[in-house]
Length: 488
Image (tube, rainbow, N blue to C red; front, side, top):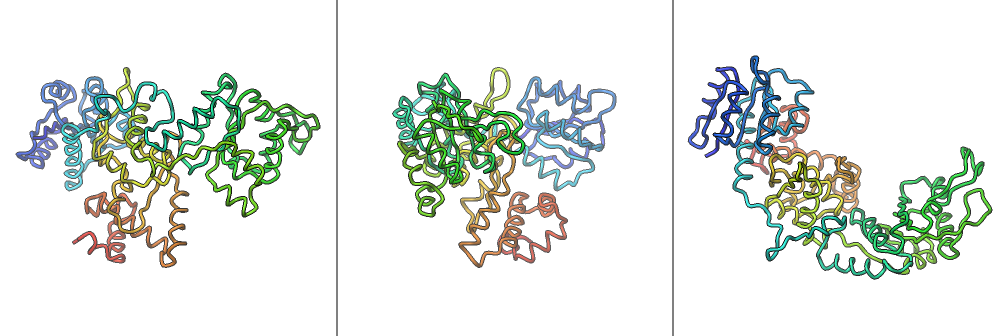
């Protein structure tokens, strides 16, 4: 039986809720003020608290929520008010409210929200949490948590072996692999275990710097070397003398800059742009690319002699698809990394949620997994990440029969949606299948996913899509979705 506590100073509201939620499956309790509710909660131990924000002369709902969080940070709370403001909504969610409702209520929607909240509370209370131990030992040791590169699969064991073998030398290393596999992390591990670890590690993304500025960024320039060069500038090679320079996305470097990099590797010297004096380059070079450099050589886009100079030793980073056994370790690593509180309290995750993460194909690799986990870490309520907290595209992929619309997020813990990645993926499908019409396909899939997310509730689905119910109904008829989802 679920325990539901309503805190509201209006008797009519308490009576209405009593009638709506009068059920053998729910133990329904009311309080007429925040102060009374705070006295009841420790004794009742409710699964969910529904809390009005404006309540007479006593504590407000926000004040009550703050008090609740002091002694029970995991209790699910829904705040409701007839006077919704942007700031109140933001403050309620900052304090960890499960949801925020505006009076008067749409009763079906109210039942849906509270039903979902009670179900979530039950899953957190009874659900099976993933066991991050193997043979009685933690999957990750404390020293693993201090590192930023995680994995115990056979492909990653080979990577770690190569890091150990190459770190003590001073040879150039070329790291290959798809975007998001952790190439820079490998470069930093080589630096950390090398004899140059006390000197600088400097990273340069060759694809992010305009062609006309990259040479100056790497080698510096003299005053007056070009328009705007009002002062002498020291380049990255000079800045990290004695250390390690990491040239990321070297496959995007122009032929002219490739020639200068080749000279640095061969002669260990360079000149600033606009200068004549040779400068010694006591720098170890580690390069990385997600491109097929042998193909680039055949197409005349990359120098063959530079490739062989860079590829003295090479490390290939496997895609996450090929090391899915590492997903539970990565989940634990990130959830512990973002643990809040003093002492840190990491969230756990439901076993069925981990299974769904292991099924997904991860086109954005570890970077995409990190972004998804950051999102669910922020939006999940309580101390357990549940299956429902995962993005729809993760949960729905296994059963999808057509193209799966997979919007993933890019690096950075803020989780900025990379719509460009999705668009490129869509047009890749379109090139493979001339019959695929991108806009109708996307529109139909969005309608289907919104209806699934809303459990068939068309009002809720329309709100998710930002359209009216009438417009949604037209799309359902247009794409013949009634038969697919059994909509009446």
